[in-house]
Image (cartoon, rainbow, N blue to C red; front, side, top):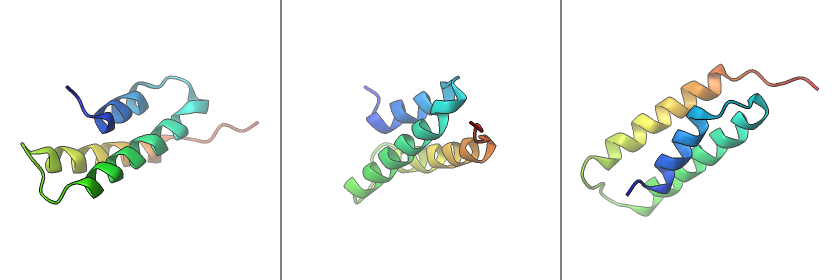
Length: 69
């Protein structure tokens, strides 16, 4: 079963609504940091996957242009 941080990252990546992307990115970042906080040593390569996910979500955040209202 996928972890909640993985679901949060995937939700941010596939979000099509520009008005919701930043919120999804924030949720993913929080989920990743919470998971990092919960373990002292990663299992089955999860540490590497967490940092790769964080890199991806930060790259996505840098691509998002705020919607002007």
